[in-house]
Structures are given as C-alpha cells and as structure tokens.
Amino acid sequence: MTCEFQNRDDIVMDYIEGGLKPSVRKRFEEHYFVCDECFNALQVMEQALWLMRRRGESIFAESAG
Image (cartoon, rainbow, N blue to C red):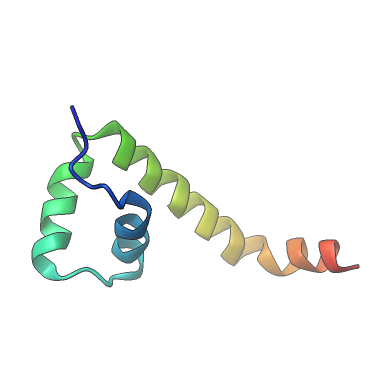
C-alpha cells in the first residue's frame, strides 16, 4: 500500500496534539490501521512523547551537567 500522507510526521504530531480538523482526523484514523508506515510512526512518536514527559526532566538535566 502506498501511503497517501506525504507529510506524515506533521499529521502524526497534529493527531497526537489534537490539532487535526475532524474530517482529517477521521481519515487518518481509518488510514493508520492499514498503513504500516503511519501506524509505526504514530507508535514511535507516542512512545517518544511519553518518555519525554515521564523522564525528560532527568534526561535533560544529565546532559546539561
């Protein structure tokens, strides 16, 4: 399957942040379950954001010191 979303990273981030128009959100939700590329991008982005929220303060403090 060829992915219809050329700007996948932007779409995924907007989806996670709740910034997509309802029609685009619905289309993306229907799409990412059949598109391995989008599904994987969504999973990676969600995991990265979770890690940053959970451990970001200590991770960035270690790199600053």
